[in-house]
Picture 1 (cartoon, helix red, strand yellow):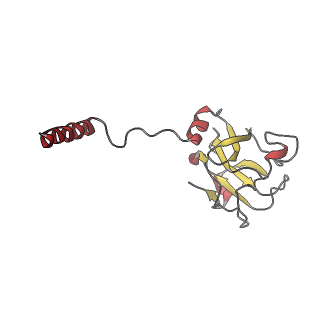
Picture 2 (picture 1 turned 60 degrees about the vertical axis):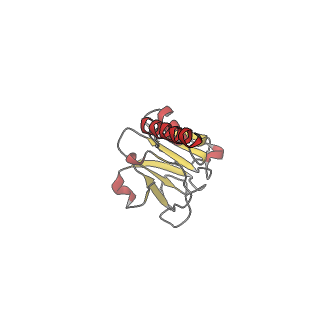
Picture 3 (picture 1 turned 180 degrees about the horizontal axis):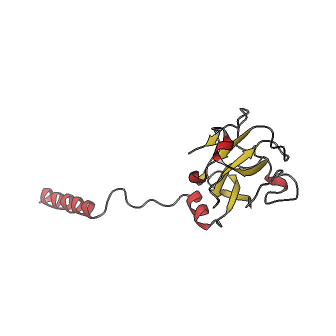
Length: 153
């Protein structure tokens, strides 16, 4: 009798599996949520991985994240661990490990099509320095201006 009940239970569970797919819907990541709630036309930076710990946003360039001007101010400099690109112009965002309008120093870019980088760990500027916790400025540029230096997930 026990074998019959166990067999019936197994068949019942197998039938239920056919009704409910094993993969199911996956929960949105924190960066997906940040993307969905972000305003169009802006570049965002976050102090922690996974688009948490909001540092600031800008719809134009900011040549010094450490000063009191622009969308990124004071403590934002050298503190970004994740970034989000919700621009509408089709341009890339070029981030630098230096400041100033000469746009010198190492750089890398995030393409419009990339949306966000949930972690900057493991990526380098064109100068070879790590990007994680080292962004000091940014500007909007054509992808050609990035000379092949892109962040990609």
